[in-house]
Length: 403
Image 1 (cartoon, helix red, strand yellow):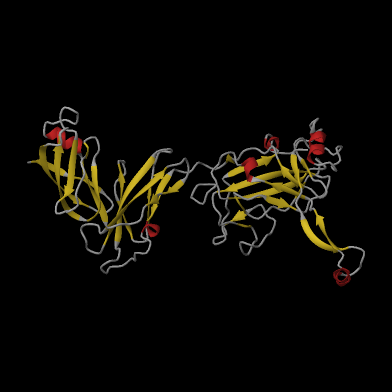
Image 2: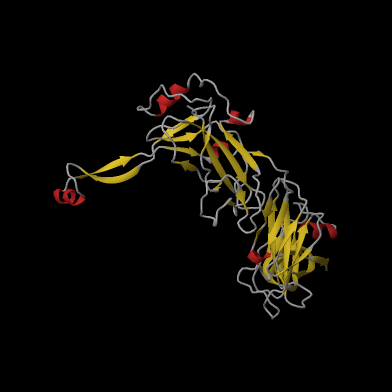
């Protein structure tokens, strides 16, 4: 028997030694009776085969399972198919006969908005394996298929023959009260047993049967703006510009609640995007953020974005500054330095010349800083004036001039 036997309890309260519930309650003599249903269950972890289960375009989202009773291999009986089920959830069939042998065919879909043919609504079962788009009525083909047992798909049908030699032992191990003489009529089939849930095993991994989809990365701008409103008034977002960082793709402009997609992308690579939000008629962004996504084969991956901000940062590249002045970071020359924003009254402790300094958060605009480089005796060896135009959600490296 190719299946794992489990008990699924139905709980009911039954009277002992009486005919009516009221009499039982009066006597105080009640007990709990456990009723176990007879079921056969299909579980995604057995057949997923590493196909990603996620609510993104191109990923596995739902599946439909169809059982066939192969107790008489010459006259197989196809049962009603399940409704579309989430790729993360099992599905159990209750209309099975104890002692009968069952195989399963599984259709995997890369969408969740499907209904069985003849169904008036998403929650209306018809038993059909044929899936359609609920709005257009157009056929929807599965992207992946699987079989339980795996051998079922080798010749496209059910093979008659004797069961595996150790199937009876498997059944006996599953439950003490299982008849060890029960064997499937077809090799690898699962045998239903009274008051037990049989989880199908030995399923083939999901196999893609449609042409592969192109990999893509998307940036959903409606989710980026959060509480900010779309509009043409001051303080409202008119449009976005999404710029890939270090990529062959160019910037794309989109409406406030739009979405931009970048393709082709290479699976496994990390893609970063600078997202600028503009007010109506503005030449510079008022808000900005950064987004990141790792491309995956055949999937449309949504980028993860930080919150929009009006602030940025100013960076002091100390190594470049010292090099431009003909100095070096080391015990024999510059050891530490101080960097302070122009106009700041906060005392600054010297820091190692091996570490850059970043000032943040700073509002958008031009900022200046003074840098003093110190030797081992903390004597100032050079002074520099640094300046940079800070933009939202970006780190600007200051341009420095030695005084």
